[in-house]
Image (cartoon, rainbow, N blue to C red; front, side):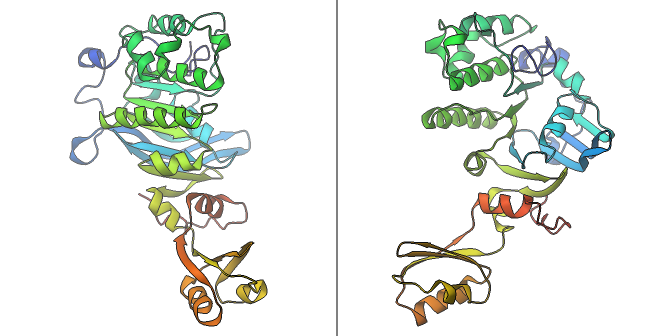
Length: 342
């Protein structure tokens, strides 16, 4: 099994979990430390990754502290996968430095410090869920009890089910259970809740949050922006191989200039609303109008003094608005988007 676990969807050959760290894992002199002596889970410095003439990653600098839950977002081709592959030791950087707990990625993986749940990880359909977990556990010198990880992943009740009979969401939960077997310090997730229903996604993230509170670090890529908004401590946006925003959900949202003014207004004059200074766009939904503007005060003043509008609400833009504003190809990536950078 390679570092990404093409047979199981998890990273980490035999190396030992936290119980063996005193002998084989992190030692006091092994790693750099951030403020207060907390180890840096991931450190990227001037990271570049090229494929021929195509530069997929362009000078990424990134520090992730232990215990953080970090969402790694960006449109297709932004450089997310290339960056994650370098962190997992699946590819070498073209330039720059990368360390995981102060070590080379492959060294950290060999010590059981890193697991990955990859969306394309293969599973053997002719094994049961429990057999798959037991087989994976046998690859580690030290592993967590299989029954325990199946319970934490929410699939203890389907241990006897054949993998080929599992739904997409159940297979993702199995990959998650397999990733937990080595009790890793760093968990990297690629679209972890694909195929799960709403309740499944909620319980999955509750388990992730519980792990993070115990010190586990989580880096995840997802297309479900609401998951990043609700569950991540920190959001990183990539565009064309560069970080364009790095901060809390609130900080990243604030980078999308303007607010939305919502009001009930029968027979609204759309052209008049569009003519208000600072207005970016206007949406008409029956008697409801939504005005997106850089100057929400001007819009509110107009609606309250020049129309019969009622039920006025002013809200900041959401993460989706920020995502589109900061990563679209018609956006000028001149560094002005890093106002939430860390």
